[in-house]
Amino acid sequence: MQDMVWGRAAVTAHGRLGLVVAAGGQGRRLGAGRPKQHALLAGRPLLERTIEALEACPEVEAIVVCVEGEGLERWRRLLLAPSHPKVRDVVSGGGTRALSVRNGLHRLVELESVDWIGVHDGARPLVGCGLVRALMERLAASPHLDGALPSLPPNDSIKKIDGRGMIIQNLDRSRLVAVQTPQVFRAEVLLRAYAQPDGVLAAATDDASLVEKVGGRVGAVPGEWRNLKVTNPLDLAVAEMLLSEDGCGGC
Image 1 (tube, one colour):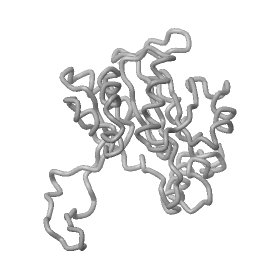
Image 2 (image 1 turned 180 degrees about the vertical axis):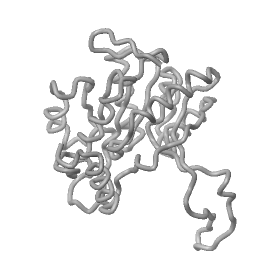
Image 3 (image 1 turned 135 degrees about the vertical axis):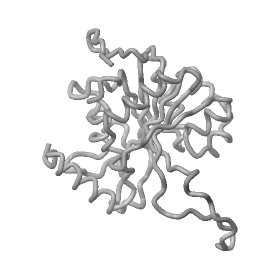
């Protein structure tokens, strides 16, 4: 696939892709005494590392970032800068991940005309451009799909338990996957999914589940093991190590 670059916009044969980055969580499990997006990863804020990784991908046209209210102005100063040319805006979160993403979606389509919208966790700073490309290629090759997401086979056996902690079912691991982000969808389908009532949004496990509720069809591509979500100190240490191996320990 060859990208066509018109001015600042990278337009691919698959259509224009915009991203909403959800970074409104408090990150209590990280134990840093502050929201995890503020945690330093190789000397730079975790969220900024995520944005830089996405901006490196030619498929990505524009990014809107959703953050917690008290850090909004700080992030606007940092991310709405010439050093982040694909960031179009930084908006306040909505109290939950789903409501924050909805805010970001509305702002993105106000600012940009996009065919596809991806939603990515701000705490996944090691996302690779190869993964973004694989998602777009799956969608281009499968016109019946409304979206695609990265998935990985579970390492451990999975069991279902009841409210007392008793095992009630052994699940077939060969039919199960763990899903990652970014999850990419047709813009109009994702907007319709996020137009559902707040209660439906609050109960959703991820963006794909909302799309499925409005009849959308979602496919999967192989995920990346290094595309980990930083939720605890061990995750942060692993991410530091991987960045160092990439030669980016101090960049």
